[in-house]
Amino acid sequence: MKNTFRFRRTPFVLLAFFLLLWVVGISLNEPTRVLEQAKSICLECIGIG
Image (tube, rainbow, N blue to C red; front, side, top):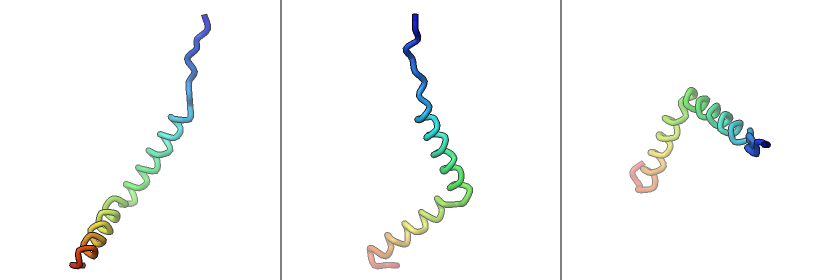
């Protein structure tokens, strides 16, 4: 009986790559920077900033 299950490697490689990018972004403090920029843009849109 032949095993028809085939292991696909690409999804796991992509997941590992994006997790690596996520960790690098967190370590470079990107979420804080993005939130600061979003706040300033929103304040400019309503005419306060």
